Length: 341
Image (cartoon, rainbow, N blue to C red; front, side, top):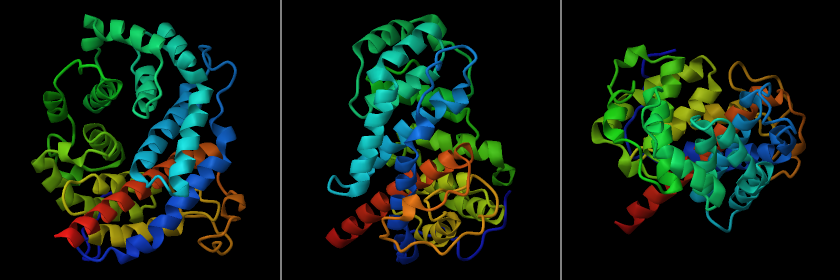
């Protein structure tokens, strides 16, 4: 997975970011348009609460839709179409969980599972609340069993961030938990591979509240990521790991201080080239041969033939939209600060 750093993927801050900015608006618009056009893939089955129903193919996609669209909504200007579409998709997801009633039933059935709480937190962070869910969750989160549930450190950070979003005191101090993660230990960078890469990206998402609070990132982790994101992204691009590339680019946008412009300028056009005309982005593998991409403002882009099955591209497409939104916001914020200086 890891490849040597290249001059083009340097981590230096500053730069023009013209190459990234030339593709980011289109990538965001088309990826979010794909999600909007494929709402049927996120619809929950009638038997979603039955034991035989696969969570990874039902509640997981819907929870990811809610979480990533909540961040897109926070990261885009209120007068933009993307802001409106993200808000509509969150409302759709809230309807799918029956305004929180379904999540309450899920919590009753699995009282010490973290994922119902984490899905609910995505909605709570957007201002959608359910009194009954929070009452039961408050009782459960005060138990010894909740505080001592054994799980991987980056998953526990996710629960801590969810507790913050719901508005309750975290069950433990996040500092020692962060220190137990692959990233918090500043692991040897040559040990980066797929599982550690996803653990790393989600550690960043949880400590920065999905890239919206970069100032929470410790200085040593910031320096470590600035040094090693370029070769890691380079390796992911070389091996056509588009989903992990998108997550790493979101991490790059979550760094405090100036965004790593050289990295964004090189990586974003490469990821944009992997996006199908429909807006879909495959998780892995060479992009399929396809017709010439529609014009950036074409209303037919979302109606273009879809070359990938839903489950093979929904996550990477949502991640691409999420990473594009936070990248655009950080680049715009940095330019505004530079102009005001």
